[in-house]
Length: 182
Image: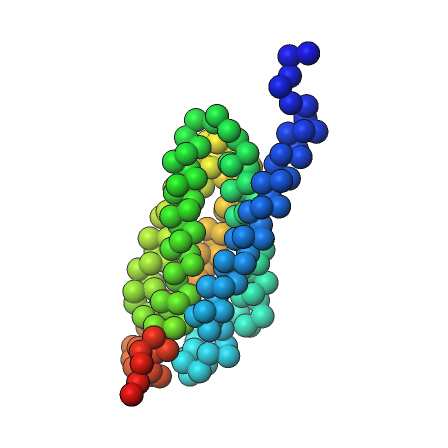
């Protein structure tokens, strides 16, 4: 017997990583959106002129839940690939882009910084593309699982840009929730 672990044991180890990463990423994404008061219930966001391709509000929750699950599965694959070349840098880059992801909603929905949020999402697209390449090198499936996320970010950057273009005074439309008024 030359095997260290059977295929069944390896699948079980991946499943344990996935059971760890999925709830954490989905929950942190939920908390970010909740803290930011993201969505159509936000008075500021409701007052903005929206682009023609703006999806209905419910779609954002569904899309982000699916995307966070796919990201978590990809992350679990890379975490599970102990000893793989480039794994450490891939994990570090993933955590960095995930932090930026969590910062976008508060920046856009709570602070009303449409232009800064657009810059952040453009940096995020570059970081996610780099992460996808690094994940691909560790596990091809992990890199592929990040492609829907990358596509959604491209669409979200279009929406962010259009909201900024259609609402040049967006920052002053309603007082940001981050400012205290006395």
